[in-house]
Image 1 (cartoon, rainbow, N blue to C red):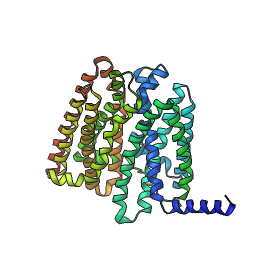
Image 2: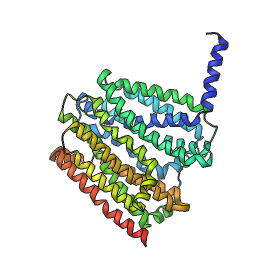
Image 3: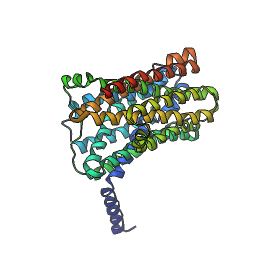
Image 4: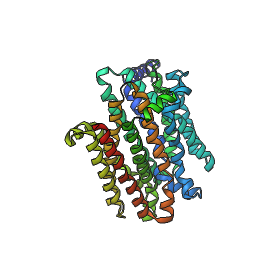
Length: 397
């Protein structure tokens, strides 16, 4: 290839990236969500390879999710002085380097530390990406662009789980994390083609503002409901791989990763949620339907058959995403001038519940077995109807 041809190819690539900034953002979102969830289906492999207890294995997911529970409230104070573009690029680069370190490490404590450090970066990366979407998209297309962003988070969560499982079967667990690390380092370069600077929408709330939102009964009921809903969701998703390996010790991790395919139904629901609200008449009735669907989906997992569980995952995830889509939209609809704080608190309660759900119910699974574990989760999910009915009353008054 001549020098002029090479420069021509480089210029063509640069031109493509400059004019496809949303594609860069969505790809970065997918890679970031892969980082968050890729370990989940292969935690039984880590349990065996590093001779870990069940608790030690499941907190690979816990430590990376923990910062997501406080990031929406506190990161605004920490990150306000950083250049948005420089911070985003460097955060993605560090994510990639940490992923490569994860792939080559053989120490449990180092692996866990790496996951914790990645957890500190991920919330800021995702918030920055959302801010860029709002900045570079025409106002009349922002809602659609955010919808595609949500789709990218769902796709990233599934792809990360699936590919880590498949590649672990074929080549061992390390290769996927090498490839993911390399992809993130390449993304560092691609992000240089984003628009120069945007104002990143980190929340910087005062305590009085937070307390003012929490005193709102409508918001508080939604927050508590979503705390327990995501608690149940992450509990099932985090302990399911162990149960699948109990059913068949020879089951491949690719098959375990494929179990999460029901997750992608969330994208369909997120873009059809307004139709569902019109179908049921209002938001609270739709949430109640979602909770009942959620509980029914949980019951399917009592049947210890892979294909039955696979189908059950679609029902379970459908219920979850109905609740989540309506609840998050309701917060935005009712918040008005306190929208940023209200949404930040929603995410904090949501991820706090999910973080605790990744490990706390494991006590019941370990000592009382899978079926009692599912009964506990079903009771918690069913109890969230209490908050749904209270929400219905507060909206009527």
